[in-house]
Image (cartoon, rainbow, N blue to C red; front, side, top):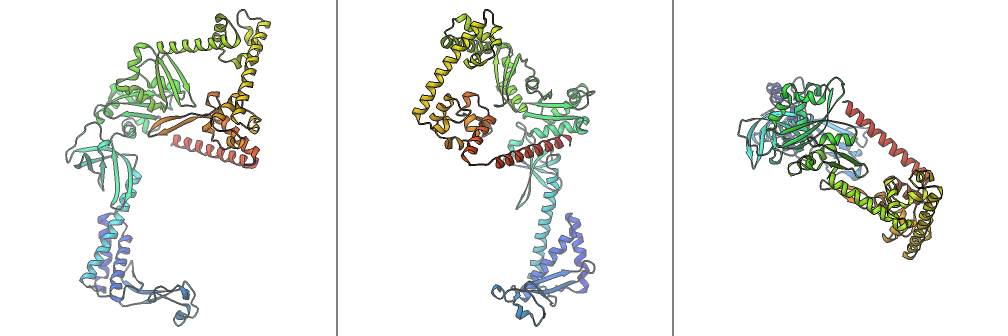
Length: 545
């Protein structure tokens, strides 16, 4: 096949037809043709030559050129495609390194093998362009629902025809024991789109919480219009789900809008999810209030929130325990997913027994340390005193409100408490010194003798040792391992040292040792504040969108 004027226009017409059929840019097809013709020319003139082909976008005329690059004397690797400045001067007097000498060469006659090779190049390029278009199209649709037709099932995975591509609904992304036959219509959530060598891989899901959220968006116009927002979704696919909603219009009830007239809206979602029961819950910024709503239909008597540990304790009537936990722990598990908190459920009887045990323990401490009778010790505990430190250093007026306590009695109580604490501090300090805790750490402000003993037992005996500690090593914290929250015990956690206090102490130690400067600490604080502000703005914009 020779590139002559008779078939020059055919090149452009062919490119246009292929591009239209595959829905890609005609320019990509023409570029593929140029590359295939250049490859054919190299096989004719020599593979070491740098042969390039340019097809005129209007006339279809193909121009073949040989390109030689001017390089330094010691950089020549290919004598057919590169030449030195001296060698280039006969062709270009002011030749410099980096210049290109371009000579036109005669068009080639394409034999059968060359034509076949050219065809392969074009097909490959077209295939790559088609894959890129497909990836970009479905990448933009990730996070949305798509309708498709089942093509086949492979090892439990369903291959779905979604128009201009195929999606994979994996076995673990199907609801319950769903089974599909070829040509069944199916609705799925596009969970992920990945670019791979064999083309874009489109992963579908019917178990993702986002699938339910998108279904409600389709059924409830108020959600689509951002009048109502879905704040959280928790699912046990095919069995039960909880969805938290909030309305930004006081005249619209978010739960009622999602349920619809006679339950029509929620029923449409339930039918799509194979009868999955859905609890629609009003969202609340106050975590305890939100949790009470999330544990419906169980009634909650009392809620105690530990924000640092992201744990929440719930007290329910004895007869409500099984309802709060749910079948196989389903209700409390979904409530935990919805709120993002670890939930401990106690009955009123269990909570009462625990409170009684704490009351007895504190009473005994006051009896033993302050040499009080049981009645007087119980009076202290009843008034809310939980430790000797509170008795020793509280304002005397707070002791005088206790029945039978006058100024003399209050003064005696505080003196006994302080004497006992001083004795304990003295013993703890001696114990710390015996362990080898150095004076540099003993003199550090903010550490009590009891803290020094705890640090010494953990091998922290110098100010240098203390300065190398991480804040969570001192205050404790939580980490997530394999999806479960795991407790990290802190050396000073029993002394109620917060993460912020631990961080301040460690930074002060590093400052005293000269490891950091005031300027560096100020810069770090400014950077953290800026990062927090940017994150807050991002969340605000996301909420607005």
